Image (cartoon, rainbow, N blue to C red; front, side, top):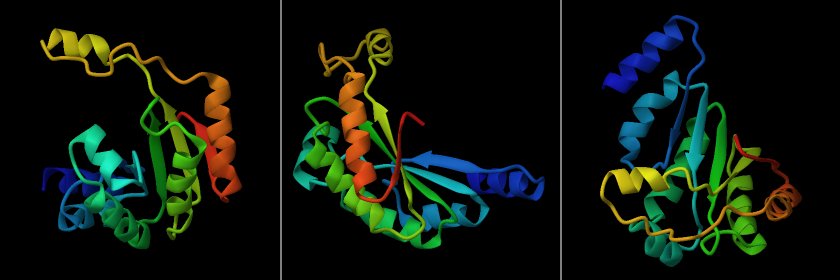
Length: 161
């Protein structure tokens, strides 16, 4: 309710509004926000449900279902993909996500977000295990290859966002 009220007040004041989300929530909650959003940024990490669950701990079913529903109702939806080595960094995996994204109405853009290690110190500070180990960010040429893969499927693609 707070977020809805905040977005509504912003819209009424002429402020552009956007939200970034994993989409892993009841659509009823998401739907309350949509009338007050100019832009929805939706993270999609993987299309394969087994791999998604293995790496994130949750199924992607709700996320993908919500992506379809959000795309039907949102003014503009941008898909964002955190590109993580050994998880979703192959051209085939990005093609699967981009193919899904390009099938959605109101989606013509995808942002590929290179994995970074900035959260590592946060985990240490919280006394939690950083399970990404020594994984390094993908090199720029790899990110450009993945960007080209998404563009071949008809999306405007960019690295970062």
